[in-house]
Every structure is written in structure tokens, then in C-alpha cells.
Image (tube, rainbow, N blue to C red; front, side):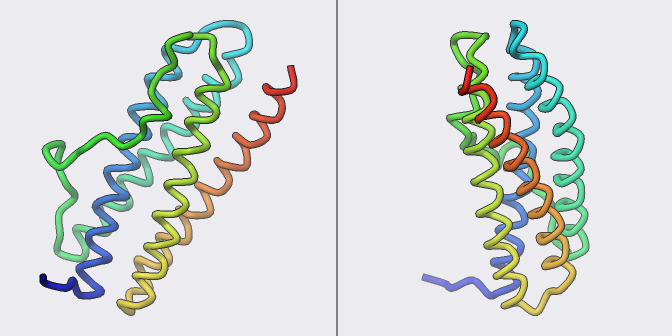
Length: 155
């Protein structure tokens, strides 16, 4: 079994994070379309606002891969991971979507924490800075949806 170098590990996690961001965009878009009802409007608007930011993250990750002489993966490399963020059967189940967002944000936070550590080990301060920047955004999204979870579960 071959061990990956620190730089190869950074590239591997950058590619994974790139795909995670694009999957999040797909699921946020779908849920923002599918959700309905009076209670859904705030969640739909929040998802819509986050789509541009998540897509921006994917762009930044793709550019960083290119700078490292690696390419971002295409759709053939994609395997869906976000089971909990699939649209709910009941299109008014706002809490199911909020919980799915929280799961996705927890996964993203974990990915970026790992990327920070790997970038430090690889002596790659540019990737480390990018990971820290995106990590802060993901933590802000999680905080927003934790607040929404409290608000909507208290009905």
C-alpha cells in the first residue's frame, strides 16, 4: 500500500471538498424549490442566499487545485453523500431540511478542519488560509441554521 505525501493528501481533500460544495448547491437548490408553505419562506430564502456562497467556495477550491497543478474533478468522480439533505417527502417539513443543512454543515466543517491540518503539515499556507476562510463561512451557516432549528422546533 502506497502512502500519500502531505501534498497529495491536501489535493485529495481539496477535490473532496470541491465535490461536497457542489452537492450542497444541488441540494440547497432542490430544497429551496420543493419546500412550500408559509413556514418555508424564510428557509427557502436562506438556502437561496447560501447557494451563491457555496458555489463560490467550489470555485475557490477549483482554482486552488489548478494552482497546485491538479484539476478539480468532473461529474464522473461524484458520489452523492448527503442523504439527510434530500428533499423531504412532505414538502412542508421544514425541520427535516434544517436538520439536513445542519448535517451538511457539520460535514463541511469537519472537512475544512482536516484540510487546515493537512495544509499545515504540507507547509502550504495558501491552502491553509483558504480552508480557514471557508471554515469560518461554514461555521456561520451552521450557527444560522441552529438558530432556525430552535425557532422552528418551538412552534
